[in-house]
Length: 362
Picture 1 (cartoon, helix red, strand yellow):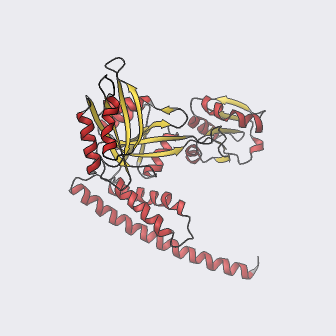
Picture 2 (cartoon, one colour):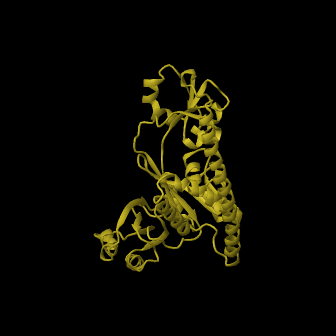
Picture 3 (cartoon, one colour):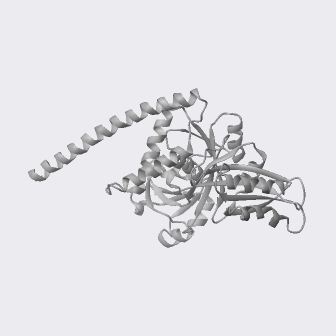
């Protein structure tokens, strides 16, 4: 090895070691302060998780990072999400229920929102997520609510009507399926495992690039990843979370047929978070069965200059041919113009319920 090269490399590595030592020291100082924050929150009975504060931190750090220009700004949020998650764990053991099993896209959404250091608890159904929160077994829940390809998840919408819980946040995840294996050499793969939907969405890619491989259906993409972690001749079609959980190499990224496939997940809890400058309010209402009833109800939004971003109808369970409207608007329930508009809308409708006011997904 060239002596000059080795000397220069050793010096640079010593510089990195010195910086790493300082980072670890600062992380411990941050964790110490976070503990004090946790004690103060307990004393005043305030929630550990504060979406407004978290959003402010991310925005401030991303803006600060742009001044330096070396570290990728897109990486700031993932890095500090884990730092915040670990520090929050020193305040309290936060528990989050999600629609399982592990390594599903809902699990990935839970990790992306809360980081790895909270306790992520898989449950078998969407209803179980709601039940765990109501029974105080967990602090928050993560459930899917709509997909750009399949549309709304109606069971989630129905449960939001029935349970006394609030939407406290949202996160949008790209639904991408990847080919993964414990073996980094794709040419040695003889079998591919996945769920039937995974095969349906990646059939074109498989026929083009791996036409002679054996395909084996299992109960979930997560199960497929679990199986292949011990099989050097097998691969799975599953999520990035599955590859991370089972230590698999991603051999080919995004082999599904949909280039724009996203799912929106809701974070549900018991309290509405305080307003930020970029919020969304979700509410439901019904109207009388008469001409112009929907127009009259929504007129208050127009009068108060409220931007409605979504409206979707669901049949009312108690009466045939009656509907409930799920609606998203920009702004927080504590904003005066939003509050006024919703009070006027409530007066014109037989049924009205605010489901949550929360920071919009970034």
